[in-house]
Image 1 (spheres, rainbow, N blue to C red):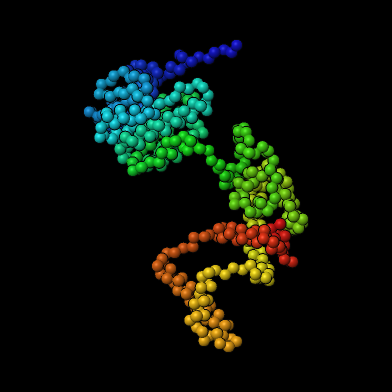
Image 2 (cartoon, helix red, strand yellow; image 1 turned 120 degrees about the vertical axis):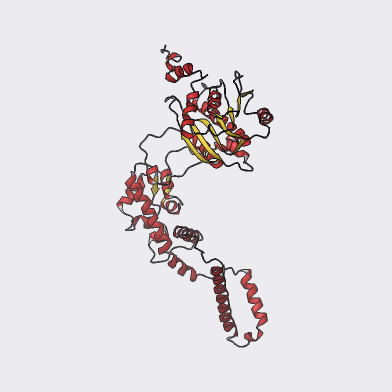
Length: 433
């Protein structure tokens, strides 16, 4: 049988004894003292709401540092022993009944500071405890949004878990300044951390999804953006297979790699890139280094991954710039049966034919009419461009070089899928494999 570790007296540190000497009801009172020493939010507050306030250590600190005749309200599930100049309520902060009781007590007042030092009954499992703490923090934030004045402060305890970053993001949408800190009175082995939110924006309406754990803590797939993210020094945690993916080995083609919007993220998910075309495999640009890198992506280091990603970008640029002229020339030789003329152009032709019947006389009438229409269309387009430039002299192109290259690449691949094969004399890199 294992030896039972010490739990009681070993946790009685200097702050425990100091709380007993100074008369504070809990050692956590020194956490609030140290937080206030740094951020100075109690001295200017005229009204304060303390959530999960039992046994009352934070209420004692607030009554000591806040101005005289300030309004202090404490709420908790268990009864709180009375304190001078402090109003205590025994309610559950996750219920509507608690909200109604606070409205009855505060009336038209808006509080300047909302404190939350609540934590669930821990011991079941770390994942369950961390989620319960994050959910409790969301409920405290919901009450804070209802009763906090514009520019007010919200100080809450958060467990450092997988839901920590989503909570910070929600805080940043509602407050001007968000800072996370760990006071000295907090035990080093504890997972708790305190987040100080200052400058409440007081929006007219807050989306209810902010306070719904299903949406607030929803897991999303984050794509890798740099090669450094692919090569980690620490051993990754075993998180199991992704949903619907029961294999660790993924074999892809070089065509899919060239068409990938994010080549770095593509490399992070691929195990092997196969050269699925004989001409592409025998091309001089396909060096032995490229062949070796494509055989096993998972064993590559930073240098090799950068080389592979750079090679893919170079090939994509060659595809988008080198073969478009040849492909367009090839398309110009094809029959024109599938060319579609827009209705607007047809309407313009009908109007011109009816307005100028004399132009139809003779053999060269139609040709002169076409030349005249081209000139008219060109003048109209030039006038439109001039008007746009005069209306907006600071007009800048919205599509950058990379966006244009992606559009050209997608256009070229769509031509290949429709059966417009490579012409003679085009390199296999230009044909895209």
